[in-house]
Amino acid sequence: MRALEQQALTGPEGLRLVDVAVPVAGAGEVLVRVGAAGVNFADVMQSRGTYDGGPRAPYIAGFEAAGEVVALGEGVTTAAVGQHVIGTGAGAFAEYVVVPAVGLVPLPDGWNDEQTLGLTLNWATALISLRPLGQLKAGNTVLIHAAAGGVGQAAVRIAKHYGATVIATASAAKHDVVRRLGADHVIDYRTADLTDEVLRLAGGVDVVLESVGGTTFRQSIEVARRVTGKVVVIGAAAGEATVSNWELNFKHPVHVIGQHLTTTIQQAPDIFAAALEELHQLIAKGVYPPGEPTVYDLADGPKALAELEARATVGKLALKP
Image 1 (cartoon, rainbow, N blue to C red):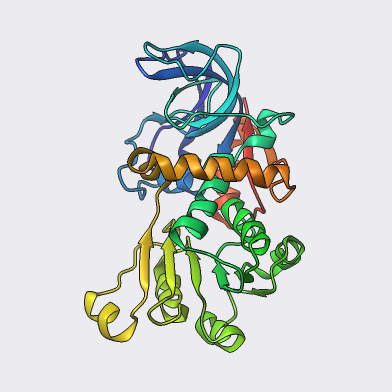
Image 2: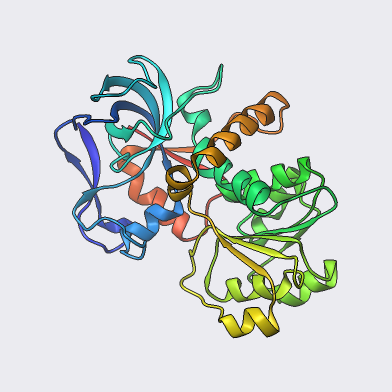
């Protein structure tokens, strides 16, 4: 089968199209013929060796895929051959991928593989972060970073549906996209003083969806409401950042909450299951429409990752094997 192999941890340029054997599903796994693979910023981080616990080169890249189940591993009873599903499994940038049955989700009725990309990684991440963890409710003010990306767009839609005021960050060229999703205010993170601007607009926010890291993490801590504000950390695209126990006690008494979807699925499956049920309700209400990813051929995977790393993309990206 064709696959994209990360041959060295040198970034997207280290990806090469190769021919490798089709993998075999083991116990608790299924083999999926990939209809579409999702591209995520974590793929960029893995390509540079900055993703915690990420694979060592060489490895078949990618970890989000939607497609048809073609074989079941031992003990799998929650999926069927011929069923179209979405899930996460190492090596998704390929024609076939092995995916753990845990966390595997059937496609919504009438949706194809491309339209479903992002259901678990983007929409479930946004929903879990805002609702059970961020305790979002009507009348709250929410700050959503990278609002033009896959998770960010989902978060804007979800927050507006539940009655929040949304302050979003995005580069200037993407502001119209974010406003059309319903954001009340959009800040150009490249030119504005984020802390000053958020405090001017709202005096503080109830929930921050923090996916950037670096100096933006500290700004997120600064704008969260004292005592009740929640900063839900879902990424570290711009690098590592820290806040001390002294600061949390005396200077920035806010809630800092970590959220990593794989860990949530493994350690809090009830929260993940409830989120999936809620997502299907949002689909039925039209809050969550079928996805419209920008699709690249598998061979153009290095280009897709490079454009994502350069912040030159909007919304979900997909590779077609």
